Length: 385
Image (cartoon, rainbow, N blue to C red):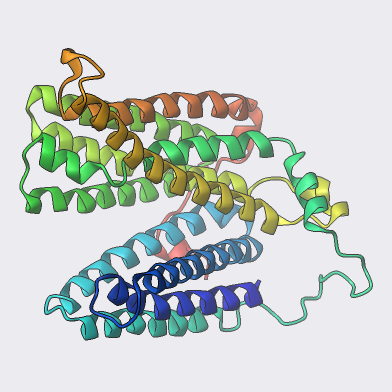
């Protein structure tokens, strides 16, 4: 796993090194034609995205290798909590460092982030994996192609349906990503400071979800049922966001934002735990391991997230244009129509997610009870070292 994490870190470093100069060219403060800025930005973000997901997937596979099955729920929760806390801390640091903005300061801050990324990943990699594991496949053993490994994985029991559920659920929770704050400002008339608090509210909801899911999973709760609970919370969340406008109650809107973080957090932790726990023993003959299962999870999640964010913004703009042209009739002649269309579509996707999860949750009571710890311990002291 270590070489992939290392080269993923190098790609992130390269992307962060290119992006700020591309932004300067695009804004006219740099040297060169605009197409150079577009090409540089595309290359930089491509490297950054590829590096992030290469590192993340290999890191999750390494965590699965190192953590015993009974500690994986806590490992997943700890990884998500660390990710969220890192995002919050870095956003505050960027706000402080860029308060006195200048093009030079932008380059310094982003490239400082690139250096810090390399340092942190180098520390994280230290002595995590032996160079020659004892259980490594013999050098003369034929290595399976990706096509063979993928065919073995996708035919595993539960794998295909789980990937559909991950894609649908991730899209459902991600489509609102760039619309929540504009909705609060344009439709509910909230000030910029109050809409900016939405990110913090969503983060607190996610943190609560991580803590709750770690404890419940450690008690033996079926991860699929916990993911379904996250989808149900999402239904309530988007309903609250939709009804905040006709009710004229910003508090309902804020409650919806917290519940979006709570539902999305439950769904993410539970589905990742389920992916980490997929039984790959049936595919061992084809060289199948946890790496491809987590790679498939990461690929589906990232693709669904990117498509959903782009589709959410595009659909809102499309519906808003139809409303402005009078194509939808007088009853829908309101700026809220575009937002409402997207939020209702997310509710439909959550119902589709529940349909996909349903057969996965059909486990016997004996199996669920067998894995339940009646006196679980949960705390920092119990996290695997």
